[in-house]
Length: 149
Image (tube, rainbow, N blue to C red; front, side, top):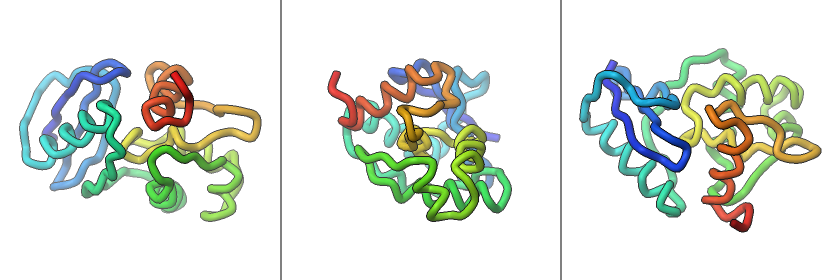
């Protein structure tokens, strides 16, 4: 499986591709590096995003997950840059509970590109599965102008 790593404000990240689709974005530097056209495009988009551009990640994605999680992740991709939604509002759109949506967020294999950081809890930020937890979520939301630095 081809992988390509990049430096980011969150630390090193590695993008993985399988059969022409992005399948994962992981914290840490991948051991093997491959510069496929898709991985280079994804890295370029992420670099622009971390530089503060309002990037629309129009990449072919194939996250592995249940049918319910797939619905949640699809709906999540419609939340625009610089805006947020709540676990409850997302649950109202796709069915299930806020807790089930939270489970899908925690299992998101392609964070940032599938922007689970844009989902907030009823009483604040909620959680985040990135290596830095809520600090990473705050960094991403700040990049998008949600918080003032």
